[in-house]
Amino acid sequence: PNAEFAAGIPPNPIKWACSLMSSAPKGASIVGAGYFDDAADVPGQPILFYTLKGDYDPGDGSVVITKMYDSKVIAADISVTYRGRVSFQDSGTACMSGTWVNNAEGSHGTFGCALEE
Image (cartoon, rainbow, N blue to C red; front, side, top):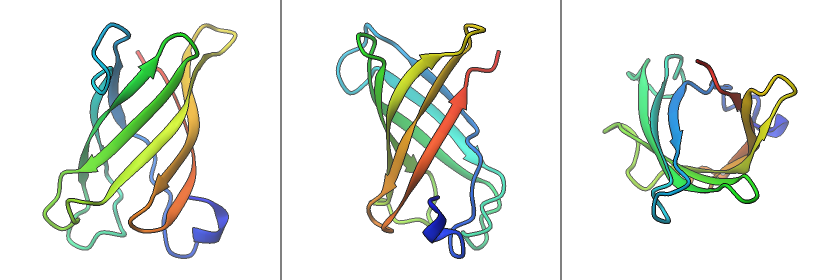
């Protein structure tokens, strides 16, 4: 999260499996899932699972991802939207970075991740 949220929202590392499929239909070119194993901000839920769906444009590398939580403790309408871009490091490793917004909770920040094989 951005610095103004540091007192109330702990940082959660990205732990997801995510596929980007340039030939898939709009709205389905990104699919995935993941978890937080340190979800201290959600009482009774030390492990919090979520699904990912969205769009990937291979022309400019842009991504829009919606993260939906898989928990009865979190309201179904709470989601996080990630907007960013895929890039490649000098080593050839694919990376994704950008910003995220949780409109329901009024929080936002930046994200970054790299392909692990």
